[in-house]
Amino acid sequence: MKDDDFDQMFGRKPTETRPSFVERVKRSEAFGGRSEPPEAQSFDRETIGPTPDEYRAFGMMPSSQVHAFCELRWWMEGTTVRESLAFPYRLLMGVGCTGEDTLRILLPDKVIEIAGAHLEPLHEGLMRQRVTFVQQWTRQVWRGKPTDGSFVERIAVVR
Image 1 (cartoon, one colour):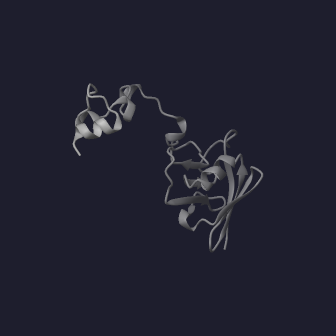
Image 2 (cartoon, rainbow, N blue to C red; image 1 turned 180 degrees about the horizontal axis):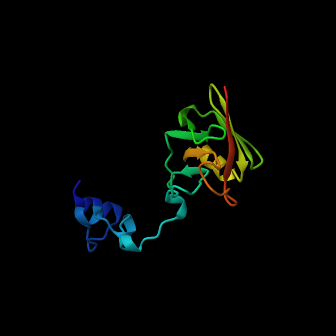
Image 3 (cartoon, rainbow, N blue to C red; image 1 turned 90 degrees about the vertical axis):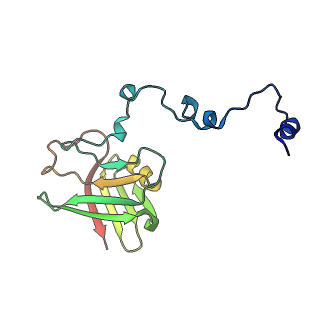
């Protein structure tokens, strides 16, 4: 079948010009190209990591992509010694919640309980496999107790 036969069969008019390969694949505004220079672009606060002295209860990937692992971080009582546990999302069996202040992560060999406040965004992020880390707040690491947003007071691993 020739191009003319194809055009005639599917209704493209002979006067329409076909874009070249370069025109079809080049970056343009309609297909993901930049519409403004990089210095003029603004970034959402959630996509930028916290400063070293700023507490963030959890981190999420800024896109809809799923993440392979989630890391849980907590501190030994009264110290700055950090403990952590990372689990692959493929082993996640379920995420349960009690109101907005307690979450339970069900894994094949353990249950992880997270207690805090305003944990609904964390619950949704875990269900969508977008959370990269969850960390407990401690006064030995961060100065002021957070008053707004999500807050993790305790992470307990039940074996």
